[in-house]
Amino acid sequence: MNPYEHGEVFVTDDGAETDLDLGHYERFIDENLTHNSSVTMGKVYSSVIEKERKGEYLGKTVQVIPHITNEIKERIYGFENTDTDIVITEVGGTVGDIEGLSIIEAIRQVGLEKNPEDVLYIHVTLLPYIFGSNEIKSKPTQHSVKELQSLGIKPDILVCRTENDIPDSVREKLSLFCNVRKTSVIQNKTADCLYAVPLMLEEEGLAREVCNHLKLDNYIPDNSKWIEMVENIRNIDKEKEIKIAIVGKYIKLEDSYISVIESLYHAGFANKVKVKVDLVDTEKINKENSKEILSKYDGIVVPGGFGNRGIEGKIETIKYARENKIPFLGICLGMQMAVVEFARNVLGLKDANSAEFDGKTKNPVIHIMEEQKGIDKKGGTMRLGAYPCILKEESLAKKIYGKKEISERHRHRYEFNNEYREIMEQEGLKISGTSPDGMLVEMVEISHKKHPYFIASQFHPELKSRPNRPAPLFVGLIKACLK
Ligand code: GLN
Image (cartoon, rainbow, N blue to C red):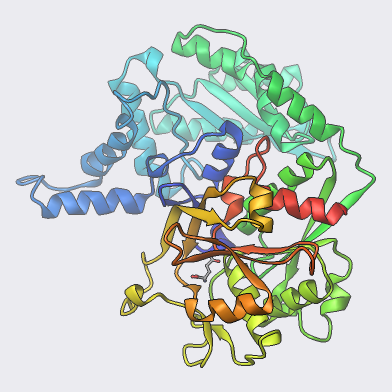
């Protein structure tokens, strides 16, 4: 998935590389999901082809219907007889997309095979607002419902994305023309705060409609903690703000860094301060202009990434943050570049680099581990998912996390080269987190005595940040910025 086209790749504890929507699910429901929660057509086709090769369909013609659709249904039915009560299956894309046809057909069959009161279809549509005539248009919704019905699915509930309140007359029209009860036309208005959306949907009666349809006891949920959280977010003083630069290369699409951005907001909630995030193009940063571009920020994040483009700008950015004592958090590639910067500018190893960018350097301070060498193809060779990490006593990392052992999620190929450990530590780059066997460097930092906040991790702390349980490394960053 190209971050430019698809946004960030979200990684689960068990190492599945998923669509960024899964990150939103985790942030909203505060549950760790698994590879079972993300189904791609690649997985579906791959499994069908494997079964065919094993002879599981002997004598049959293998086709989209029923083989692909059965495979999709199996992913949904796979949760039966587990401790799962309800499976929410989101079909991405827009009704009518060629990519989605087999999935729509599969979920149609689910409705046919299960009891009517056990299956519910919710259709999310857009209600455009026409400024000139001051009206909300229901036509696109009518068309998309018609399209869905031609595929054999009748939506039970409409969730309507809108910028303005839907007038009663439009609700009536939607109900009549889309063949959905009026109480099941649910308004989903753009909220002042993302995390207020579930409360808004609750007020609109979405859960009531769902429970009625599924014949579940309709009880009043206790949302008090979430309400309190949203109130706290709303009460944050908007006058004062902390400005953070995310210096990366995928800056044209905010979704490429969605979890990092959300984590910064979560850390703002925890510190009761508004955080303003700017995406800064690393390709535009060089020795001459780094001060001019970066001096307006209170803190800097260098996030993860792949490939050569913009690398030198990242190194200049980190140099600027280190020398000017600007609070800094490096993530994955951001940590690797912090190590390269330190090697070049403190240890004086001018040609230091990551082997990812310069295979011939004499000082590959970041490299591929011996056991991974010889893998010349790149697909599927990454360290993925949650790994434990042990934090050193007396380190900033341990102080921030407040415990010795942590678990964080990874997605990378290259690692810190252990040959440089000693000399880096001698010169002041502390190895503050490692794998339990001590072999893999997971965190580096500069002592608090020399820098207010300079810390970097090989893992992605943003993948586990939740609005009500912010990731400690981001909380520490914003706190340092406030100081
Ligand atoms: N490209 C680097 C690696 O493969 C870093 C990856 C990342 O930042 N997620 O190790």
